[in-house]
Image 1 (cartoon, rainbow, N blue to C red):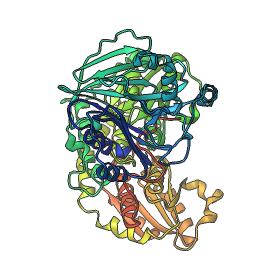
Image 2: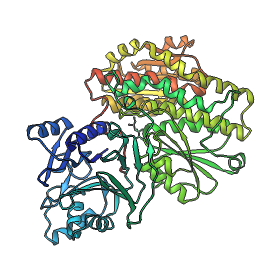
Image 3: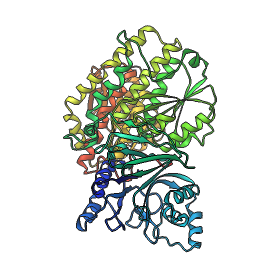
Image 4: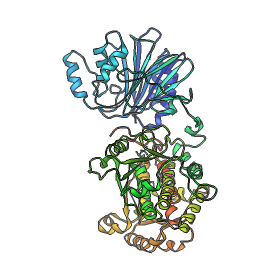
Length: 609
Ligand code: M6R
């Protein structure tokens, strides 16, 4: 989603802004812009539709000089992608410029009010009311005008503001949309995400909701919206910039697929003790608490939701606690059964997904205890949940989630075992076996990744297809949903996932000669039933690409292609069997010439509802 960068210091701000915006490109955007306070104390504003390269071209032709500036990559919500609607937005006399992430819900009323006062609007955006309101309230004190402005705004907003009338400062504001401050020596930064500033500083202030900051070259002061000073610890970033760059791979997606053995190792091994037990230092769920709850909710979006539904089957199986699941965008409007005997688990890679965050807050309000499975340390979800089980996948940059999914599933396997033991519902034998299997996952993933040539071959056969189906039963169906999402988001091929037994209740009508049907057959107890479903498709001309476990050679009789993954217990197979599906999507996308890391219309971190 939109990206924000701000700089104040001694460097040419344009270089820092463009570099920072490049690091945020992965979030998805359709236009970009900058506003730099130039050496003559004028705001030089450049904006253009399209990729950052177009903006860079523009700023190279006629140079932009100045040490203070703000920049933005926009993902259109109000108004089409265009130069005019790109940020920064400014007031008519061009002395105040603002970049904004989020949505101003009452912008129409504010716009009418400002038009009556004589303000002109150049764009269709909600954001443009902000510089006009600041101008309206400006009586010689920028901070005061900003405070009065934000008191009028409803909705979500992360803002970076620069004014030629207050030329030695930048103002940053955060409400329901993430924003951080990078602290340097003789220079300071604003950004919507850490990769934008990590080239310059590892010292970060994480702004909370309802906080704002005034940045000068050599000082940062943080306050709440009423102006009360806030004392904050500097947070030190420990991960490396290399982890957020491509490191020789053609795309982040393939790099992140190949990082899965490490991501799984980092997520699993710190939780397993030498004497083969689970230690969850980060969460504090006691036996007494768990025995007192009546249900668990698992709520998330997209891929994170797909990991959550695997979690549901494992927790119900090992801990015998009823688990309800919902996508976060529906959860709030579905009259959820939440009370103080509910454990609410939210799952999020970014920790900033607006719907998931709102679901977490609603559950808290209704008295539930909240636990987050999250990848980004210090993100809003990580900070607001009562307990947090981190996935240690490292930065995930590609819009298509890969290593986040496998580590989220691993986190759920760990959690299900843990809850199973706390509730005395899992036998020691089962517990020890699954734990042992869990520790072997990273090397099994390494084995799958050693030779991906067969998947490339199959991908070549799929590039011209218009529809692809994914079928499975049980956990295989959960994986089918994720495989199908991956394929459609990066290749733009229409795809649907079905519970295999459900196919003949309607969707089978869509199977034609040669329709690729990816059939997951990894669950021992459902294997024979799955083979029958594959035969139903094959009998209608479908082209069956089966994914099964090594040793299940009988599947070859019912499939056109078989991809084997190493043998493993049914309950831990998801992080293995999903890898071929990720690779298949990646290779089809590359062969179709798609923008793999930044698929059209999508954003990495969905910070609007
Ligand atoms: O950051 P989150 O895990 O909360 O994001 C949730 C979804 O937006 C995300 O998983 C999305 O579905 C991915 N693009 C799928 O690859």
